[in-house]
Image (tube, rainbow, N blue to C red):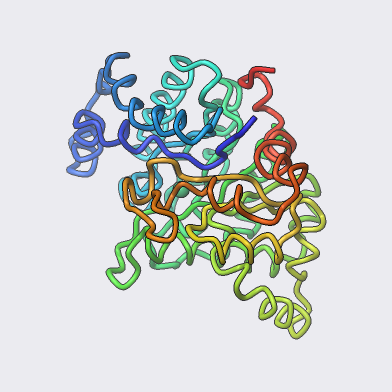
Length: 335
Ligand SMILES: [Zn+2]
């Protein structure tokens, strides 16, 4: 089995009724009724991604709402809770309509002023609906990075819920208002490595939550290329080392890197037990071709397939690790 642990239903999120709803919210109109998206529209939005999954032999994808559209810096606390519920409802319906192909990962109604108890309640509600993990924006201020590190006690209610319900948090960046940091090119990757370093800096977090698990997308940002730097600074500042937080089974990364060399670096820098296959299938840069392979850049299966890993190790990366890190996914997966 091959599980793509990192996918977003971008086309579904771009349905005019869905985007129109958010625009109305942000214009202060607060529409009473949620947009009515037909099952046919949901199915149509998934045609492209399903055909890519067939051509790439990806059996199942863990799918979440569009990351840019989380936009947790915009709106109000109330609006963002409704916005997250709307998106989660669509994700759930898409997964139910395609039994065995998709597993739901949610978004959360974060906001710089939202009490984290409220976010924790949302985790509980959607985990009870079958969600297996939740995207959590470690910035939450649109690329301004004005909040204290996400690992602080202000987020403990979120971590308590995630640990109690056995759902990992995917530390995924969102929209950037800073034009120096375009979201897919920079902000997401800054969010990845910032989140990783904040986890190294957090002295008590894994003592307080020993079973809490975080997934950091895109190979942990700069992690494979600069792991030596973070090993050095960890010693210098008496932080947890990258190897410690990876080795303790609290932090995982995915294979969303778009060339052979960096995939190999990932496999050499990070323990294989901490790496989950991910491809953002049809998400990040749809249709853009990598001349190195003659295939789409985001067909990350090629780089894993062509790597020097043994077939047993590939099995761990392709499915075994995802099943272990996302235990609630088992009810969605066919045997
Ligand atoms: Zn993503």
